[in-house]
Length: 540
Image 1 (tube, rainbow, N blue to C red):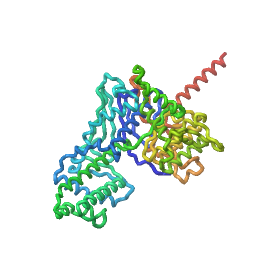
Image 2 (spheres, rainbow, N blue to C red):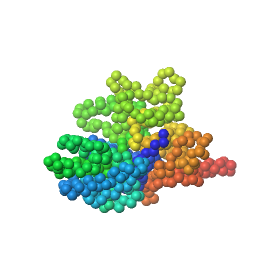
Image 3 (cartoon, rainbow, N blue to C red):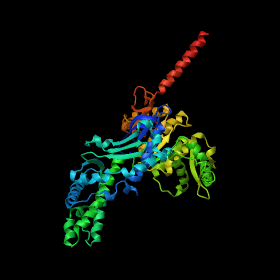
Image 4 (spheres, helix red, strand yellow):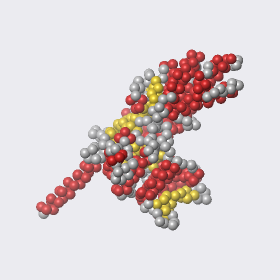
């Protein structure tokens, strides 16, 4: 599997959020959060998860995407507006379709088109409450103000900027800014004066195809028969004249068709800007093994508590964070996994993880009430073992296997807290390789970690990219390689002023053969302690 995720890099800047004073990270196919405890690594991961949940709901082809760009916000279009937009479509898209299919292209929108797109995507303030609800749900808090580091300072700022567009000459930033204050959250969009759009030709072809199909259907609805090739005649015919010759209200039909196309175009524009946040995200929390063992008991307890809440008003319902609640809900949903169609490549990933680390197979058993039980069958065994009786390593990795087999799709984000938990160092190294293979297959990964071995193996995978393929023979798993632009390591550390943590990128250090995260200082300190003790023993 060599397909690499096509997700564009997105820069997330955060200030005054929970333990985090200042942070600026770039979401890459493999993002690693490392640093001392209580510096905000899980906070950042949960925030990214919440943003994914929000943008996945309100962008792209999602059923609720109309709430992000309401059709009612399309300005009144004059005949000149329609003609300009149609002329631009005729001139631009067929030319792009003839170019090399693998390349992405920067489309600079003329002002006559940009002025039509800009108002559609500009006003999203009506979604501020929805974004606040998603963030507070994921963190399990009542109000967004709870997450502001210093309430007296007034606000937390989250900024999202599309780096790809800036790199290719975008005139000004394009992104979103969220301010969370004591009064609530507010989301704004920044739109540059010159609007440019980086589009894959596959998306362009889809846009052209949808345009052609929609307009052909419209013409057929009014009695005009389709002529020749959809991809040629449909854009080249003077359809305004055709409609007028038929005695129909050409402006009515033209406006409706072009409004729909303009709306679709603006929606796709937002999807590109919000990428990769428009893709689904899945969160495997640090306590996933315990949840796997206890989810049945936990669900029954919640149901029992809910049924008695009216009798005990002074005993509120227990609150789960959305991160943990979503994980438990997904475990229940796995009962229907036997009916899910899934890409064989992702089952291959799950099988590789089972055979290289678990040396057995993780399965789901369905109960009579369609509630899942999780079992493990070690290689060579004739019977299954309840997961709760398997080793701690198996319990930790079983959710990863199940998600790869039944849940995660290309382009999705998989967040794994502390993947090294309950793993021997050699297994940590192997698991890191398996995660890199998942990145190669198109899955994006975020991990929070305290493991030196995870960072060192990631360094090896990046270093291996410098070695030509013909010279990799004899190196274990030489087919698993990550390029430097696929990996980002971000160090969370307390600020020198003691005012929250700051986050900075750590680059690969070729001398130490790792992404330096201070583990060497711990080793040095322990060695110095040994030396001091030894010296005193010799003195006595």
